[in-house]
Image (tube, rainbow over all chains, first blue to last red; front, side, top):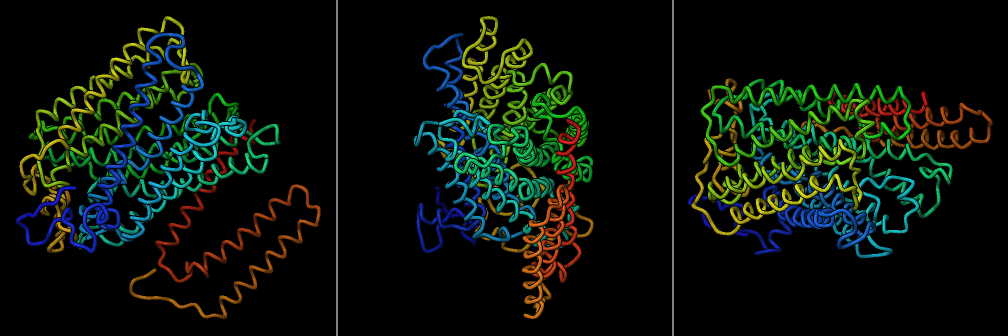
Length: 536
Length: 94
């Protein structure tokens, strides 16, 4: 943690001014900015572990047949990869890191509404992650169910499912409390003059996200507890041998876990909506359409869960109802893409690293979104369900979308976080490697998926070899890009950052870099004729 | 809760709510002794809903809050109903 004196009279939040110094000062801090950074450090560690697990899977898949380990270990690896990446990285993701760091400043607040609850949420996150990871080293070995814990297998397997499920349950509480905190903060603590329709669009996306966190997460919490109850008490919820219904598990699981995709992607969309007007120096095209489309995605996205279950034995009626709803949710997403592109039209574009990653996001998210439509259609879904095509699709959304938006956000707010700039050339190289590596890794999975390569198989037929090997080389490029990014951001101090290095208009660019503890020396206000994006 | 007005509920109201909740719990248990076949679950759900309404209204102060909070609660209930409806589009037509 860097400690530096700035020329500003108020000490920066990076300076320890309280009772404790060093690590203890961070671990006991209720400052939203420090909590955001702590989430970021934790997530980077978890992400690195998840990446290593992914590479280990890719090595095994380089040739058909068993190479260095067998199917049981492969099952454990993809389960752990999924649990880490989904529950500890992308679900808390942008909301926990940048929602905490930037949102209160962007709405003109000194902190979130409940700072202590915010720190408690962070500790729940760490506790939940620790419990989930401990499942790998206790009991009868790592769980082999996949991150979805599908019943009845999750009831019957002798692996250590209970700890992993309970870890996810605790992580859910962290998510609920963060969502609650953000809703109250945005309702009660906006700057004078900042009505809801003058609020920047990243907070808007967080607002929509927070409602999903509060309303959907309890359902998966209960569902996961039902698994534990069924394993320990033999209550027949899901296992047909006990009188239960396995499709009910899938309903309950996806009632949360599909909206969870929007918990991940909505803040990512919000970040992109901040970056594009700043680097195009243009007012956001269709401000209200973007704000309302966030709410539309959150509300319609709540009711599309069963498109994960077309081949599970659901009724035909349910299948077409959910297919229709799935197509509907594409509309507000497309509105956002249209508005981002239109905002750039006739803009004074500055090709800085955050903007480059934002463009990468749009490209990858479009591919992920369009292939999502082919999966939402009943006829095509039946053929590609549970193939590598699905793996490619959700990585284009979750990594190409959320991951690239996360990288864009780090490059965007880094000068504000640390008060330092970074090397643009290195940052651009990290983009080149990440973007090309990503596409080389995942695009072949679309092809071999359509050819019939099932997902979650450690072995494959010889005709899939080329696709699997291309994916391996893509993974290598991706890792190189990630390492370059870490070196660019954290290896040495860059030159001192000005307060507003990108020419942004939202409140965070009006405070010192790094900001003082309570963000504002003079509380900001929005005049009646002012908006959040008054460029031109 | 409003910033500008804090409503204090009298003890007597709380006592009445407690008695009503206990009475309804007694009714819930009693109806399990009667064979109502398909209506059993429905009646249990109706009684639970009434209890939930009383808790939200008095213990959780919705009666005294602004309409914004009522809208939020209504929204949650609406989502709950829709989730049940969509889930039953599977179970009823299998």
